[in-house]
Image (cartoon, rainbow, N blue to C red; front, side):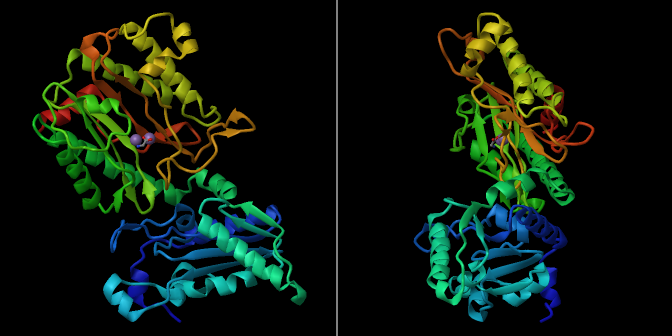
Length: 449
Ligand code: GLY
Ligand code: MN
Ligand code: MN
C-alpha cells in the first residue's frame, strides 16, 4: 500500500535517522552474538476516572522508530547477517479515529517509517514466540516493567512448549539498555539540531519570565509565561515540572508548588526547559524580583557564575566527567570561606565536605531525550572521559538557609545557574548561550520591562 500524502505530511521528521539507529543497534547486537530485541513504547497513564495524563512515548522506542503513538512495540531480529525490523502498532479503526484521532495503522507505519514488517498490536502475544524461537538471546529492558517481564517469559515458555517441533527457546535474557545507552550518549547531528532549538526556545522563555516578573505577581503567573513561550514555538511540553521558586522557596531544590507571591527584594529561581520533538532543554536562571541585585545577592550570584565558568573551562574531550564538578566545587568552597559562610582553609573545607551545607547536589548530568539522560558516568570504576557529541548540563548553585552561624544578609538566598553544553572536538558549544546570564545582561533585560 502506498501511504496517502496526507499521511506522510503529518510527519515532518526525516525517518532515515531512525533507520540508521536501528541499523547501528543491529550491528552492535550482532557483535554481541545477535538475538531479538524487544523495545515497547510507554503505556498510557490513567489520571483519574476516564482521564489520562498527556501521552509521552518511551525514549528508547522513539529513538529507534520516530513513532509517537501509544500501544506500539519494536522487534529487531538479528540473525546471522540478516536484520528484520518489525513494528506492532494499533490497527486502523475508523470509529476510534473519529473520537481520538489519526492512527498510522501497520501498513501506513511500515511505509512511512521504513519497517520491514508491521502488524496489529492485538496479535503481538500470538506472534512473539515465532520471533523468539531459535534466536539465542532476547534483549529487553529487564526488570523495568514487570508486565513486560511477564510477557517476555510467557513468549519464551511458549517456545519451550513447542520444543518437540524443533523450536529452541532463547537461553539468554540480556538487557538492551546497556547497548542503547551507549548509543544515546553520543548525539548525532539530528539530535544536536533539535537540542539546539530546544535550548533556544527555553532561553527565550527565561527571558520572557524575567520581563514578566515584578513584586506582587505570583510564581504560577511566571510559570504560565514559560509555558506560553514553549508552546508558541512548537515545543510540545515542559521537559520536567518547572521550578519557579521565589525567595526562600529557592532553597527547596525540587520546589514545584509555584503558588507564592513574589516579593520586592527577593530573588526568583527558575529551573525550566521545554521538550521539543522528544528532546529536553534544562536551564536555570536566578534573578531579582525587582530587577536589581542587592549587594549580598550579587556577591553570591557572581560566586555561582564564577563556579560555572570554572566548570565550563573543563568541558572538553578527554576530561574525566567529574572534572567540571571538581572545578565548580573548588570555586564555590573558596567563595563560601570569603563570604564567611564557612570557616577553615580551602583544603579543610574540601576535605570535610562542609561546603555541602550550601551546595548539596552535583554540577550536572547527561542531557538528551530524558532530562537526566541515559548513560553510565563511570567505566571500570573511573569517571569516563568526555567525548565529542555528549551533552551535559553545568549547574552549580548555592542555597543558604537561615541559621545563627550564617550572616543574616545571605539568609534565604538560593541561586543556581544552569546551561546545556555540547562537547565538540575543539571543546564545547553552549546550546543555551542566548539565555541572559551575567548580572548586566539580566538587569538590562529587566530594565526593559
Ligand atoms: N531540572 C532538573 C535538573 O536540573 O537536574
Ligand atoms: Mn539539570
Ligand atoms: Mn534544571
